[in-house]
Every structure is written in C-alpha cells, then in structure tokens.
Length: 76
Image (spheres, rainbow, N blue to C red):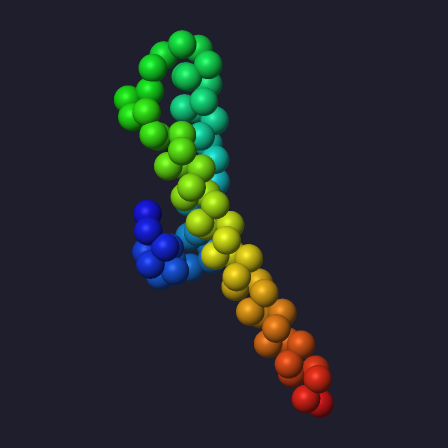
C-alpha cells in the first residue's frame, strides 16, 4: 500500500492494517526459518517497509496534534 492510500485510511483502519501486517511478518519469517522458500523473495522487506510507513504516518499525526495543542496553549 502506498503512502497516499494509507493517508486516506482512518487511524483505526491503519491500526488494524498494522496488526495484520505484523502477524503476516511473523508467519512469513517462521516459514523462512522452517526452510520453506518464500513465494516472493522481497516479501519480508515489503512487509517491514509498509509497517514503517504506517508507524511514520501515525507519528506525524501525533506530532501535528501536539504542535496544534501547544500553539493553542501559548496563544492564551
């Protein structure tokens, strides 16, 4: 999923997607360790990147929210 698509999702939808990706990463890694070759060699890397995208987007939103609250308290 691209960043544009992730931005369109609500926070709850992103959290759900994040949980799904973490489970999928565990599943793929365990298959890899067990000796079963992955269907897509880059699958683990792609999952990790998408997890990072979601976490980054969540952090950006958190910082924007904190900055807005800080601006409100300073102007009072």
